[in-house]
Image (cartoon, rainbow, N blue to C red; front, side, top):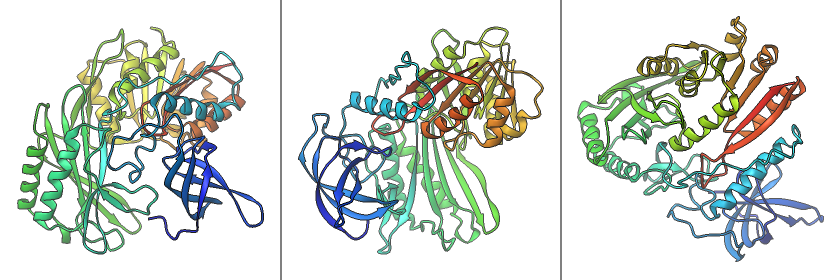
Amino acid sequence: MMGKVCREEALLITRLSEKGCGVGYVKERDGRLTAVEVPTVLPGETVFARLYGKRKGIYRGRLEKVIEASCDRIGHRCSHYGLCGGCRWQHLRYDRQLEFKRDFVREHFSIVYDDTEIDLSVIPCDSPWYYRNKMEFTFSVNGAGTRFLGLFIDGSKGCVFNMTECHLVHSWFSEVLEGVRQWWVESNIDAYHLSRDSGSLRTLILREGRRTGDRMVILTVSGNPDFTLTEEQLEAFVDVIQSAAGGDYGKLNIILRLQYVAKGVPTRFEERTLLGGDVICERLHLPGMRSLIFRIGPSVFFQPNTFQAEKLYSLALRYAAISGESVVFDLYCGSGTLALCAAQLAKEVIGIELSPESVACARANALENEISNVTFICGDVGKELQCLSKQPDVVMVDPPRAGLDARAIGCLIVLGAPRIIYISCNYMTQAANVKQLVAAGYRVENIVPVDQFPQTVHVENIVVLTRE
């Protein structure tokens, strides 16, 4: 899947890249050393690898044989290991995963702190397997007409493999996939082709409430009326899901999502409930606080690791040092999870979120939990902050992976809140934003990585900033 082989080499792996791959070096004809990035290898190992074309001056490599293994290497669980890029670190001991994540965070934040009391120890996940509450799968057909429903092949350009097992989610995910594949074969529906805007089936999203047992299945299809699914096909789909997702669970909800695309026009979605309702529920238990229940719609973001999210929010609120007189802003608040937890401690909480569906869920969650001292505003964070006259004591911010844009950063600096709790799943963009805040007079008081994504290179990170 990587193209033509350039050469084959024995490599000494010296470090890990930020993608979680091993990096070694080869000597070119002119004597220069060029980096090679190889998945599923570890520092200290000597490996034999095939080298493919360069990307940004680095060879892409594929492991052929481990000549000398690291003492950190363990056996992998999944039959898709090496093909799927989701679990790059199945072969790495979990305690060493945490240490590498700590080192990655430390390297990026060394430019903004020098406090030796910040140890950056990563908060581990109690269960490093079967922790995810949501996954998205893709329908695809190759040139030979073979059907695929699963995840993208690591390093490929949009190629999908048939996933039969995954050790990051409960087994019912795989059972649903198998049932849907059989329904697909029997119904003879086409997968969606983007370039031609033809075919029907695009993606299948599965999500669940880990504490409630609620389950949701979302089938996304083309909105092109020439490829509309028949009622008989939809009825058969519902029957398959009910059979495959059977067992001890809460509510089962099945949603059909139509995706409309046209040149020069924003993508538009319509949703139709095929079974149950349009939300699932999840509970969060934070130590010393009232348990809260949250409604989650089909497109609403919720932390993908429920139990680790409870640790994340508990730590964030501890470092926020909220009192009964505090005014708290929660920026990019999503469906209001952190805002509603903070509202149990604060005088007032204001949440801002761009997604109308998320804000609707947040307001419904406030009513569900009988919390009245929180206000949710739908709009762009930077724009809405300019319209607020209140002065916050604490600002909590959890932006998308791209981080804070220039207007949001500028507004935060002008606000000058005494304390900022910055949560991010991308410590690289987070570090760049924190550097700007430090230059504007803030000090990094603490950095606390929380491992929400075992077996992967990703880590959630909390940065506590105080105003000098």
